[in-house]
Image 1 (cartoon, rainbow, N blue to C red):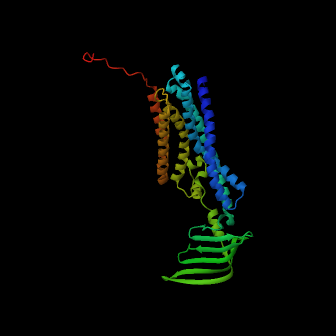
Image 2: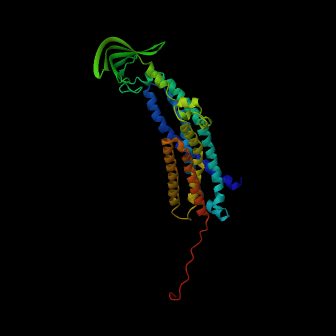
Image 3: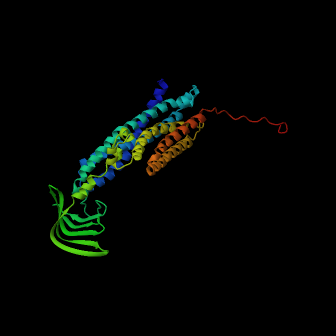
Length: 379
């Protein structure tokens, strides 16, 4: 690589590291705060919170890297122009196409980073997070028994606890089981305890009442039973959460491109949805070179101005927003119909065409306009 290319590339990589660090920190802290509130309210320790926030970091980085590449190329090009280095390069005979070569190399390097994340690290992190969530879901007390709020562990079941005593007693317990429309049961108790047995967890209700509303021959019958102690099996509630479908995004791209029956059964998704997820990963790395080239090419338009290149920066941001908007629209279309996965490649293709068009405009000679010769009458 020529020295001038190495110089531009080193400038872009330095700025990229700075912008990536800042953006990742902002995104990660925002995500960590929400996870901290959720996990701490579930009774988890600080180590679990730290583990979950660390597992979300690869996904955050894969989202931020294309934006950081755009910011680095735009800021780096602006600095080269303000310090007259870009003018000197153009005066030496380097065309916009030639100047774009190190920027394209920079974008490809960022794309390789994104590809490594989305095809390897992110699926591993999501798989590990799914396993840890399944382990935590087995802890019934942490998952379902939250004080002061209504919980819905499964469809048709409503659970409420006023408070949890320091010794683990559940005070003022309420449970409604409406999974069977012909036999709705409501349990209330002054206190309740969670007891672990060989057959799974049991809920022991004390000093309460059970109400059963049965529908028989079109007539509703209500029966009320008061009890001192009553055992209720909540293993089915914990089991339904622990046996939820595995996240499709936890599988490798190779398996998603050729999904087998075991994968589709474990995730509960169709073949088209698996292919859509795989092609979304394949299209995502292309965002990085497109973003880097947009930040560079737009700033080459126009001549020198004492007011800076703020107009070109605005156009670069607008172009990036258009490409991102097309990407979001494509994702929405694929979410509605997974067979439309080829739309995932349209946004980077449009962004590439915009870059080529802008570089072509920047390469056109811009000489002074010729004035028309004065007429004899004007003379």
